[in-house]
Picture 1 (cartoon, helix red, strand yellow):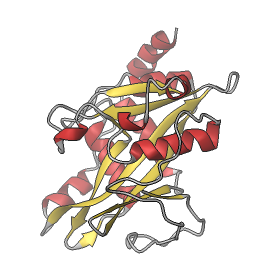
Picture 2 (spheres, rainbow, N blue to C red):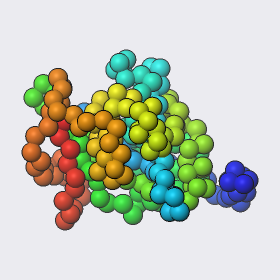
Picture 3 (cartoon, rainbow, N blue to C red):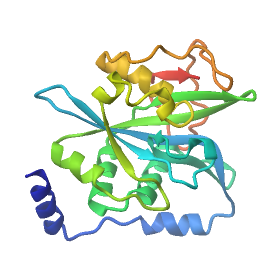
Length: 239
């Protein structure tokens, strides 16, 4: 019945949500656009209020993903922040752009962007590689119904992105999905997130790896120059 509702919902929606033309023009005429090593991603999930069950939507990285070692792994939906005319892109605006680029279904894209418009809080993953710190901003997008979850999870990916995959808490608890199922240190983030929010302790927290490490948290907003700094204190994960 969910998919019957989905079809009716799509048929009743005549207006298509498209990428903002002003953004396209502005980026097309930018003097210089470079890709940074910082990222902005969405943790997309639905919690069943009756059962407490939780399901997530991740992207499976495609066969041509760089680096090759991460191909076929799961990742939070999103991508890298751009450097436009020497200025680092705002993380919230970057994720809006990534949703435009990666989600092909206009209905799914509209649902995600409308929820993201109301979401200003984020968690911060800090990776350390060769002495450099790389920040990934994680925005949580909570879906309100099984219908919304079905719309998003059944959406095709665009812009050479990988397919969307559904994962639930049992997959973590049963170790069908592990830390190594995810790209880079996103697996460390998800293992900690599942333990802290749902009591799912499938694996021990990471202690020390070749390319990332745990250190006492600090609060650093230096990479967010495009909008006023938030008044809240985000959860910060150092790897």
